[in-house]
Length: 558
Image (cartoon, rainbow, N blue to C red; front, side, top):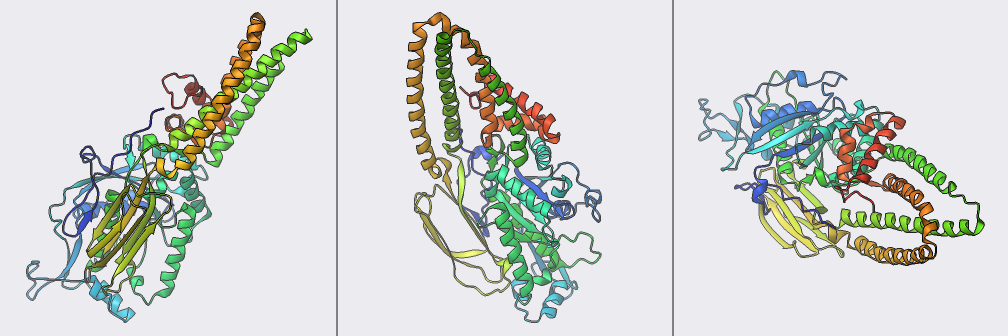
C-alpha cells in the first residue's frame, strides 16, 4: 500500500522588517499561485471584496461594476477567477506638511493607534472621517517578492436552494487546475445568519473536514466607528457571531476579520480606506501563510444527499445479491447441503475480503505524512483599539501529539520569546506589539496525520490480522470441501462471482468517505445536479467503473 506524499509547504515565506513567517519553504513551491476560495450568501459582499482586493494590489485599477450585485440580485452565478499580483504592502496615511508638500520625507504619518486613544466617541468618529490635508499611500515592502493570488468568487450559498452538492461541483470544476487551496474565506454580512447559510457551512465542514484548518471569516459592511471600545454592545454581538461560526464549522478558534468595502463613496476618507486596505493585506498574508490543502488527495466525507443516493444503490444491489442466493436450488438434498456449504464459505471469504479492503482504505486515509492542524491562535490588535503596549502570552500543550511543524506570522511584533514547538508536546510564546501599530502574531501548530491517528491505525492493523486469519481458515475449509467433490463445486462458481461485484458496490455505497479520484469523476459527471433516482444511475456507473478498473488499486476492492 502506497503512502501519498506530503503536500509541500506553502511557498510564501514572507520576510521583511515587519513581517516574518517561520517556514522552511521548498523550492518547487515558489512558482505556484496562492489560491483563495470565497464562500458566502448573495449580497454578503463577496464580489465587492474581490474588487477591493484588486484595488489593494493596484490602486489605479478600474472597478468592474458589473461584477457587483445590487439589492437582492446576485451577479455571481458561476465561479469567477480573479488573478492579482502584489508584494503585500502596508498602507499609511500622511498629513501634509505646512505648504502642502505631499512628500513623505516632510509629511507626518497619522497613527491609528493614537486616534484610538480618543475617549469621546464622536471625536473618534470625526477623526477617522477626516479628509482635509490627508492622503493615503503604500508603504515600502522592504524588497518582499511579488506573489500571485488566484481568487475564486462563488455563487451565493443561498442561491443553491439546498443543492450544496451541485454548488460544490461548480467549484471543483473551476478549481481543477488550481491543485491546492490555501484559504477558504467565508464572507458574512451584518444581517442575522440564515438557516440556509448555517446548513451550507455545516455541509461544507462535513464534506471537507480538511478545509477546517484553512477557513477564515470576514465580516463585511462594518462601520469602523464601532471599533471604539465604548461600543460594548457591538463588541458583544460580534463575539456572539464569532462563537456561532465556530460551532457551525466545528472549530474552537477561527480567524475573523472585520471590513467595510465601501467602493462607491463620493468622498474618500483616507483613514477608513487605510483600515480597509490593511485588512485586505492581512487576509492575503493569511492565505500566503496557510499550509495548503491538496485537492487531488482531499478526503471527501459524504453529505446527507450523497448518502441518500448511495442508499438507493445499496437497496438495488442487496436485492440482486438476495436473488442470486435464492437461485441456488438443487433437487438432491445431500448435494444441496454440500453446495450450500461451499457457497456459504465462499460468501464468508468474500465478505472478509471486502472488510479487509475497507480497513486498508481507512489506514490509507490516515497513515500519511500530510500535516493536520493541532492548534491555531491569533493575536490581532485591530480587534482592540487601545494602543498601550503590554506583554502577551500564548500556550499549547498536549499529552498525545508531538508538534511536527510550527508556523508563525508576525507583523509589528517585538521581544518574542518561545519555548517548545517542533519535536515537543508543548509550545509557549511571550511577545509585545510595537507602539501605535496594529500588531499581528499568528501561530499554527501541526502534526503528521499518521501520528494523530496512530491509535486508529493500530486498531486497524490488529483487525487486519484477525480478518486475514479468519480468511485463511475459511479458505482451507472450502478447499477441503471442494477437493472431495471438485466437479460439483463448479456449479456455483459463476453465482459467487456474480455476487462479488454486487457486494463490492454495496461496500462503496456504505462507507462514509469517497476516494478523491471517485469524487472527481462524480463532479465531472455532474452527478449531484440531478434528482436522486437519476443521480443514482450515474453514481452507480462510476462506482462500477472504478471497481472493474485494474489501474486504480486505491479504490478497487479485492
